[in-house]
Image (tube, rainbow, N blue to C red; front, side, top):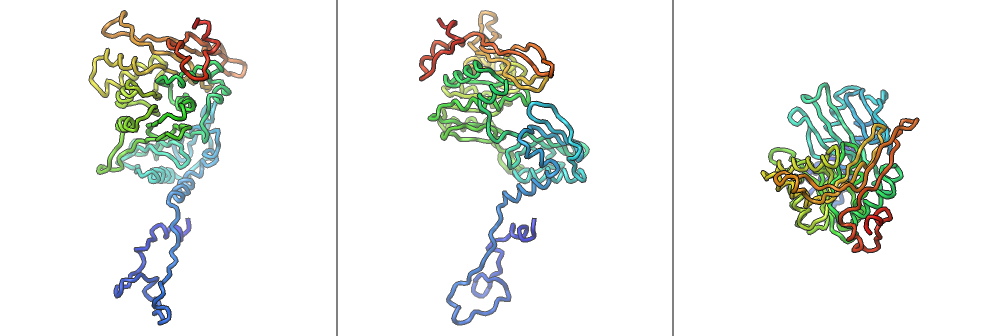
Length: 422
């Protein structure tokens, strides 16, 4: 960065010398006296234009991350793990991690400096007092960094990259994550306004699926998205994207997911979409779903059934309620649970879709299990000669509301349900 740009960062009209005799701003203390012919003319001072601070920050970050620049520019890369100045691992879509021995910083101090500049770009600090940083790069990649004294030596950086264009259900079908019947089923679920919870492990494609489902939200509906780091994109005009805010210091104010969900209801939305449910905001989200709002969210869980148990735990963190009341709230608020799975060959598939029909009080009035109807399932068969998973998708029972699909304009009951719907 040139000296002119660096100096102009702090250049302001107030920095110009002031002539104390008449209060006029001059270009310098030694400026020549004005001639009688020019005394009444205004003095024109050309002030260099201030550079865009955002662009400068982006340039600085790019310089500090130069050893991995080719991977940052590669659209197929989804994860970058940096453990030290010379231990960099890359993962591309559909594969595992591999090491890049050519990606190196001169010293661990340079890596720490890169982390601090990333934090500075989003108004956060990282150091001995705050050794953990969650931030976002200018290209929207998500960054998590941890440094000494919680990580030794130096710092550890995890970068999650996201595609510039969000995938559609057609793309997921082409990738083999779903089939044509699953595509149609998901479209029906969204067009009928079901409340959806998407479960899965980290990197299983939960947010990717959530983005693709949001494409079926009617254009005239008001949508509010609530996230820690913005990843969801809604293809409609009546959309407001809310994002949490961490307190920069003790005097700053933190804005949580729970507060944003409460505020979102004041915007009179038809849809409330939460990027990830992982805390006491689960209670407020379910209350929104139970009061006439449509919505969707993601949660970490090992199966669709486990997602309901995880949701129970999160609600109990927020409110001391009888377990039966918690189960009742979930069964009335969540209609559909979808589970995404990463197979051993690193392929991602939609493994199951279930419908929550209520509680089975006949089994246990105090701790009733959920009534679950299986709608769709992936059945693994074998691995082929190339080590790729081979299986098939199976449409199971029709949903309990299949007879109401005639209320949706221009929608016919799919062939795979007609026999069951007679």
